[in-house]
Length: 382
Image 1 (cartoon, rainbow, N blue to C red):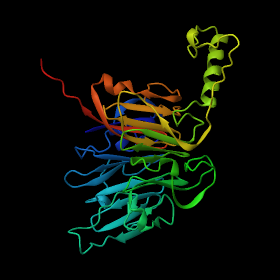
Image 2: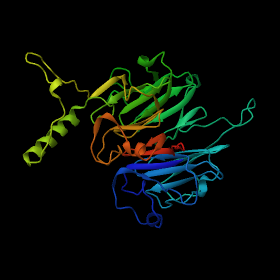
Image 3: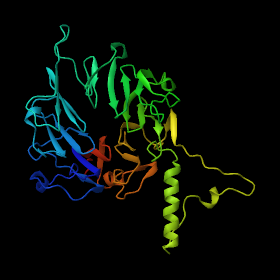
Image 4: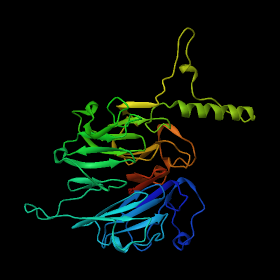
């Protein structure tokens, strides 16, 4: 499996060449075309990527499992000795949390300490042949937050299966497929139909009875995928991150078009075809959505289902069951992978992987960048 990255690269978290491993940072801040990662030259297989704003962490699970960091770090591309033998890892701007078979450790990335800032033993249950499985940020009886206190308890009745965290809100998926949210709700990101915040997990009633298989959070938006491969979105849409019509993006496109026309550049307006133009006597008013406080069904493509989804601060990436990657939202750093710096309020296929005959199997978004795991498609011999 190979990983590619695109978007914000001011700290070299996407392209880690030999020169950056030696301490020189990359001078390419915006990477708009997917670029293959070389996070760890000493390890052959990278299984998972975790990302924050200034860093990317490669979790290697083959052989001697370990974590390698890229970006704003002094150990760029070098396996961290503290991570040897870890089973899972997550990274924020301040902490790297590692899960081992018998313990959990959180390391402060801003301090050069020889001991973790927080740790917890994982006890083996007597009725189990081994320790409970850990799916970070979930840990036994709680979860790891992005800021202190790092450990937060969770009620056992939730039966948490996975958890997605933003800086200010959380989305939990239970074993039964029910979605719970809590935290800041000022942009409708909790999906309860209002803009109020919630201190405790509350079930998203609009999704009741529809089992979900995957959840993700952005800065102020949330998404989930149903067992049937349908995608639901809610929260803030100012940058088109929900894939719904955004007034801000449409205004920016109109201003750019007017500037091009004033500069004398040929420009064709394709926003409305002749057949779609309002007829005389008809009123045509486009509907824009800034905040979607209830979950809304988003059709990416009618021909296939969504397999998994990930969110950046103001953009979203979805992988389909056919192995395609679609992106939408804020694209000023090239995080949509469309080989330009344009934003979009409509899901767009990342053509690069299809052109290279690659099948996308996973995606992980940093705040302003995107990482995609691919497999080379087998070509039948004639």
